[in-house]
Length: 271
Image (cartoon, rainbow, N blue to C red; front, side):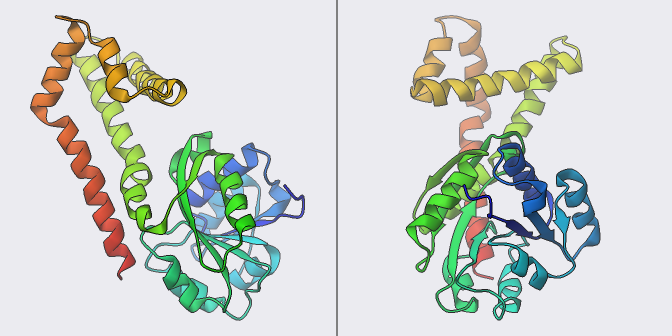
C-alpha cells in the first residue's frame, strides 16, 4: 500500500478509534499519516492519546490532509457533514462511510458530482484484529476503491463485498453482534459462578469457549450444527444444556435480535 496514503477520520469516537488503532497495528498507516477531527474535543483528545495521530481543528483541514476519509459521525449527522465539505472535496478523495443505515445515494446526492463513495459496516472487534465488516461501492467508485476498502478492513479482520441492500442485515448481525456475544459471555460466566467457579475463572473460560467455537466454524468450514452434534454425546451433559436453551428460546431470541437491529438500521436510513 502506498506510503503516501493518509487516512482521516471525520468523527473520532469509539468506532473510529478502534479502526484507527487496528490500522496502526496492521501497519497500514503510521501515526504521521493518521488524522482526525471531531466536534467534541474530548473525543479528539482520546483519539490522539490512543493513536498518536494528529487531531485537526476543522473538517476542511482534514479533507486537505487526507486522501481517504472515513466518515465516522453519527448517522443523523453524516449527510450534513458531507454537504459542508462539498466545496473542498475533489476526485482525489475516497469517502468511506461507516454510518449505519445511511445509503450511498444519500451521500452521493450532497457530495460533489462524481464523488467516490464506499459504504462499510464494520464492528468494534477491529481493535483486536477481529473485525467482521461488509462493504458496498457507490456508482462513481472505481474497482480500485473497493479493493482498497477490502484491504483496509481485511487487515483488521474479515471484509466481504455485498450489495448495498444487504447492509442493513449486516448491521443487525455483525454490526450489533458483538454486544450479543458479550451478553452470552456474561451469562455463561454467571452460570459458572452459580455452579461454584470463581468469577475471574468463569469469565475467562466463557470467553475462550466462545472464541474457540467461532474459530472451529471459520477454520474447519463445517456447519455449526455439525460441530454442535460433535460435542453432543447421547445422554450426556451437553444435550441437557441444549435442551434448556431450546426451552428458553435462545435461538428465537437471537434471530429476533438480528431482525430488530436490521429494521432499526433501515429506519435510520430514512431519517
